[in-house]
Image 1 (tube, rainbow, N blue to C red):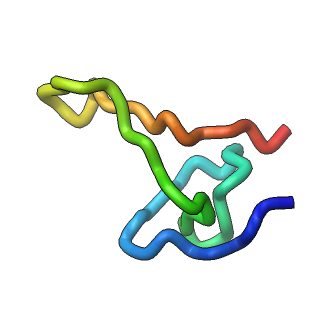
Image 2 (cartoon, rainbow, N blue to C red):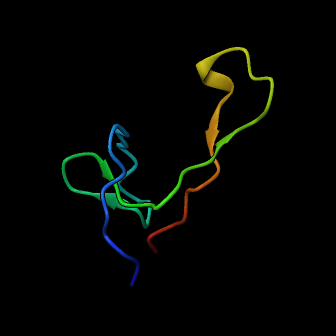
Length: 53
């Protein structure tokens, strides 16, 4: 099991992520957003996502 430290200022609604916590919180120690040179929010992706299944 991972450490459940809340990543302040990060809202996550992906309830199938291992790091998701009720209340739309993220418990990952660090987050990575991809790709470099994205020009819209639709082009971005959370590289930290890990399936909870």
